[in-house]
Image (cartoon, rainbow over all chains, first blue to last red; front, side):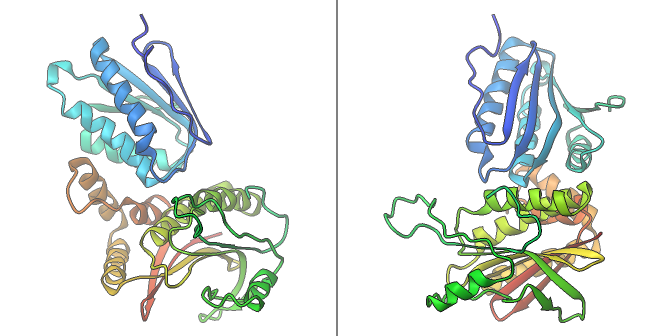
Length: 131
Length: 215
């Protein structure tokens, strides 16, 4: 059974999210809403819980086509990393963000996030090697 | 409002819904104009509470720089105009400037305007202006606020002048640790990620924040 079968992907203007395969979330568009935690944050939390329940060792979030996010949305990715960090070590999974080298917010923010919680967050530029 | 005009200055005025008390703020008064006819017409109708910062398309910059105002938005704090303004500004700057410039302006537009709408006083309008200074493009956002908040903003921008990257990393660290007071990433992103020059001018209780980048 699909680990994410019971999760509803929220409809957000200018944003498209889809679960691809077993362990990959694709996010395209822009996150330009004032309180993204109310829908996207809730969805991320549900995804995190499902990944834990399914005992997946890794999960990938592809943001390479997410062209703009506001600072409230940056916190969503930080929160996701922190949920893993607060999970007992044996249950943790590896969260990989697939990014684009051509989108400035991704280069800046994910390298900073990796420097802060590099034990659980990994960054894989679409045109390069994993960090 | 997400389709920009070809070659005109856009003037937008917006006010929160004052009518039914339901909290629904969808009703907004907007207008597009080449120049500032919209402001003048509004003023003739007797709306004296919203004084735009400038009433001319080409304004005399106090620094002696030839300035063309490309976009001007005048609204009250609390207006639900942030998303459409960001969408419009991004679309407009994609037409007028290189993609990297559009990306920077889009970021500054969201973060500065969001702060002004959230923390500005409703007594005086929030004003956003996008200005072409020939060799630079500048986003100016002004609002009324209490002295303590103005001073806090001034101090934060001074910190960003000294060390934009360090301040940004510190804000990220605070976000990760969940430390209080809540991290304020927006300005740090404009300075570090957008590599924009931020300035803050306070006159009486009105604060003007500008974000500038080279063309």
